[in-house]
Length: 303
Image (tube, rainbow, N blue to C red):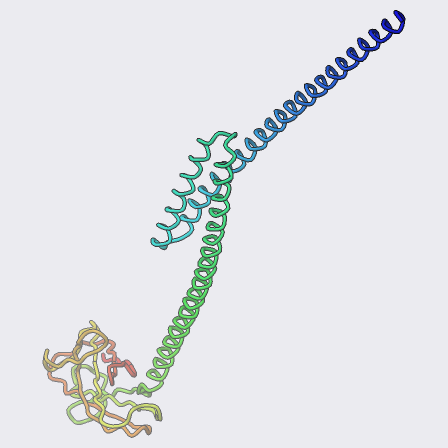
């Protein structure tokens, strides 16, 4: 009886110990689980904080880069209205960048908000980049077109100048071809009886004869012929200082003036100088003019 009582008492104690151990084990498992969960959560929070810190830095870099791009875009354009819009967007980007720099890495909600803002900034910037690129392409095309127009104008100007020069050259050639030409210039010095003499003291008349050659390009009609007789000292024989005609850019004196009717055919002309003054011996020169041009010349001597 005593044996059974003692045995029952021992069994109760053993059961009690088992229950206690079970409770301890359960408590240990719970504590371990809670500790593991807390450690794991702490680790996750740490990783998330590090991740947000990295993402925050990347966002700051993007905001800063976008602000710089707005500055670069303003340099590329001359449109004041568009420049003002770009400046406004740049200031907005800088403001968001400053807000981001003030945000703690643990403030996930604020970081996410600024991340959405960054997406908007990126889209707006892309729109302006496309717009300005299109404007630059258009400006480049217009510049090239303007350059082509300038080149064509320059080429046309050169062509016009060349044509004008060719026309002027042709005009000069035609004018030269249209000039009268006096050839076969001969001089007879005559005494009072009309006989030829070379003795200067006996000369009373000087007869100058020349031939105006045929010229189909010359203008026909009335022509005024001027003859200058130059003495050995190169002074011109003239009856009056008023006897002058225009030659090149000045007026010069003449000795004899004669009117003729020119038909374009070969024509012989003779003019006379009546000697009324003292003439020195020596070589004399004859110069013949018409239409403002010198058309012939000759020489003779008296002793």
